[in-house]
Image (cartoon, rainbow, N blue to C red; front, side):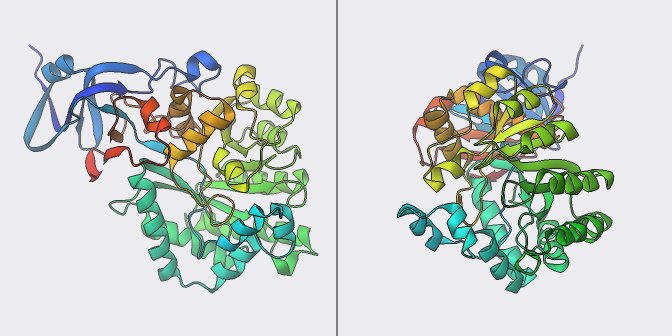
Length: 427
C-alpha cells in the first residue's frame, strides 16, 4: 500500500489549472504555434507542495488521494478560480534612482527617443542621477519596485545594472541586487551585468577604451565578487557595434556568464545574428529584426525575448513581428523591460495584454511566453516557469476563471494570491 505524500501546502478547488507543462519542455524552449499555445490545462485541479517544491499536481481527486496535509500546513481554497504559474520576467532595469517622466511628455509631442538621448537624456540622464545615489537609498527604492512586481504576479525576475557605466557605480548596482536577493516578499532575482548599456559621457570620444574597461576590469570584478550571472550589451546603431558587442559578450562568456543582448530594438543592426552565432541565452527587443535575424534565431538555441510594452510606451507602431517569428520556428518569450524611461511598467499582465492586441497573440500564447519560455530565456526551466512535480511551487490564484479574462481586463488587479516557494507571499 502506498503511503500518502506529506505536504505543507495544499491549493484546492482550482477550476482551471494552467500548468504550462508540456512533455519535451525539458529538452528546449518551445517552437511553433501549436507548442506555444499548449497551456497544459487541467480542470477541477489541486496542487500540493512540501518545503517549497511541488509534490503533486493534477485532478483534485487524484491529488487528494496522493497527499496528506501536515498539521499546521497551509490550505488555500481557490474557490473555482484559475491558477497559473508565477510569472518569469527575463528583462528589467529595476535598479535606478528616479524615473524620467519629463521625457514621456517630450515624446508625446513628437520628439524621438533618439533625439532625447542625443541631447543628454535617456540612459545618460539616469546615469548622472544614479551615480549620486547612496547604496542604501537604492536598496530601498529597488525593494519597493520589486514588491510591486511580485504583487503583479512576477515570482522570478531578471534585473540589470547599466546606469552606473563605471566600475564602482556598476558594482554598486549589482551589490544592491545581492543585498535584496533572498529577501522575503520579493521575487527571486537573476542579476545581469549591463555595464555596456551606453557609453558614459567621459568616454564618448574613446568608445573602444570603454569597451576595454568593461572587458578587462568591470566584468572580471563582478565575477570575482559573485555579483552577476549574465552579461548583456546594447547592440544598436549609434550605441555598440556588432564587433564591440561580440567583445563584451565573448569576454563575459569566458568568465562563466550567460550571454544576452539588446538587439535590433529601433533599427536592425545584426544583433540577432550575433546572439545566434554565440549561442546566447536570449536576444531581446527585436522590434526591427531583419529576415536574416529571424532565420538565424530559428536555427539557434537562443530565445527571442519580446518587449511590447516599450514600443507601446514610446508611442511607436512597429512591434516585433511575433507571428512571423513563431511561424519561422523562433523560440519566443515575453518581458516587461521595466525601466525609468522608455517603459515604466513592471506588470506582466499588462505586457501580455499589449502583446495580444498589438502583436496579434492569443492569451494562451502570451501565458506560455511569460512562464516556461521566459524560464528558458533565463536558463531556469528545471526550477520555474511551469507547475509540475519537482519544480518550485510558484503559482498565482487569479480572481478570474480563465487566463483570457486576466488579459482582457487591462490594467486591473486580477491576481488574488501569490505563492512563491510554497509560501503565500501576497494575498
